[in-house]
Amino acid sequence: RGVGPRRASAVSFGPRRVPMPRPCRVRQVLEVEVADVKQRLQCHRARVRHLEVEIGRAQGRAELWRGAAPVSRDDRVQAMERELAFLEQAARLRDRLDEQRRAIDRLRFLQEALQARVAEAPPRERDFAADVPVS
Image 1 (cartoon, rainbow, N blue to C red):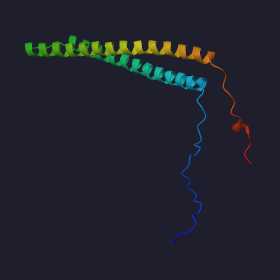
Image 2 (cartoon, helix red, strand yellow):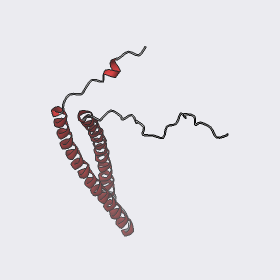
Image 3 (cartoon, rainbow, N blue to C red):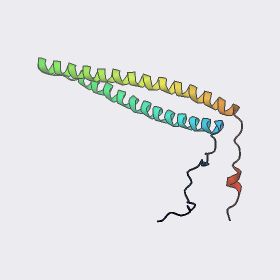
Image 4 (tube, one colour):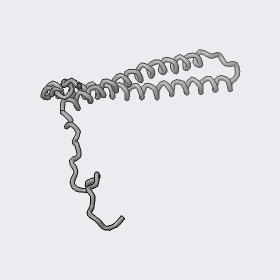
């Protein structure tokens, strides 16, 4: 480890060229956004179907308690409280259902706008590197 001429090292501390990724193309980004909106629409529609089933169940349970014939006054009060609880649950579920439907409308509007922008975007450039066979 004496003093001598320096050897060239494999590590260079000068400015380095960092390979830049391919620039994102507008059309590709828009296509990904359209696919995302479609997926979100499917999820919201599934929630709507689930909420509709839950609303039917809550209303059915409220009907069962409404049709009950309790003997004592306390039983009547309890039956009315349970009926009211199921009716309130159905009302909350209907509010959530309305929110989901509004979200679906907004997503449909967004999907249409994105699809219009995709149609206006320049066509995708071919990736010629993918066409070159590797030997």
